[in-house]
Amino acid sequence: MTPMPDRGHSNRAAARLSKTILALAAATALVVMAALPQPVRAGEVPAFAVDAAWPKPLPNNWIIGQVGGITADSKGNIWVVHRPRSLTDDEKGAALTPPRSKCCVSAPPVLEFDADGNLLRSWGGPGEGYEWVGREHGIEVDDKGFVWLTGNADNDNVVMKFSADGKFVMQIGKIAPTKGSNDTTQLGKPAETAVDNAANEIYIADGYGNRRVIVFDATTGAYKRHWGAYGNKPNDDKQAAYDPKAPVSQQFGNPVHCVKVSNDGFVYVCDRINNRMQVFKKDGSFVTEWFYEKNTLGNGAVWDVAVWPDPKQSYLLSADGENNEIRILKRDDGSVVGSFGRSGRNAGQFHWIHAMAIDTKGNVYTAEVDTGKRIQKFKLTSDALK
Image (cartoon, rainbow, N blue to C red; front, side, top):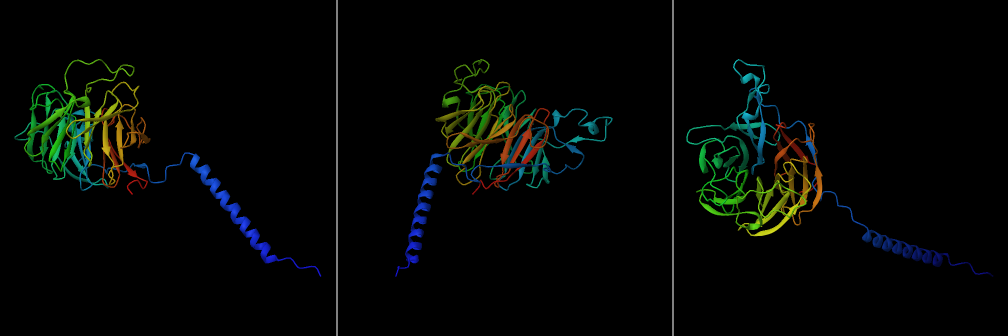
């Protein structure tokens, strides 16, 4: 009698063979995947979509001109300083005598919005006890709610400090001629400020006239320290026009256009015309520099920088007003991992993007000068804050 085949044994052997084949296939796949560049996981790099409905229409027949500065406060509100004197007669027709048209009149220079685009507060301009700047430029709001303003017209060699409702508090420098990049009392058309809240110090990108970063006590206005490019003593010698083929400049160009301070004590400075960002420690010692779009001429490629609000502050966003884009940079090495925007007039495009801000939720706000004259909001669409 012919023995019957052991079907149970055959099935078990087939199962073992199948498992072995699957294991080998999985191992082979892992080897192949390891050899290939790995895609960035969703949420690792910030991504944005323009909110074309932000902000909401202004009241009182108001219009804004060139927007020199924009910042986000600790409450998530957005502060703007614009330039009423940049409005043309056809834009401010209702303010002329006699009125030229039904619209419009200038809004006050300082405006506060919430994240939904509602106007919360407005003030600014000449007042008793202080001299207002000739051309509004930068704005910063510290954790105590004080508002810091700069200007860059001739003799706008001051930084002004106001309360949140526009009451004058303090002034560093004077509306008077500059005294050069090593004077410790007078500024040189400062572009932007950054407040180190923990140390109670204000850092000033100084600026359109001088070639330095200078630091003062944020309460008393007492001078602390200053430095130029590479942490060296700045000078005001005439510089050759930027040439991408020439050796890199050992001095900042004009303007020194931005300054930001990270939570771990690094200071980021925009050397706009020289297409570079320089990084320092708080004492002014040089750490490194990064170049972007080195062949850019005109007004340069590094206009502003903002620090990403995740716990590690993993990224920097850098505004480029000549190429009209925002670059997303890894903060640890300055490498570019993304960008958005281009030259144009449509929502999401830019004409001379001049300044930018990021709120605590990762939304980006931008300000445009020249004929751009607008602010925009870009909503975070990725999980980059996790």
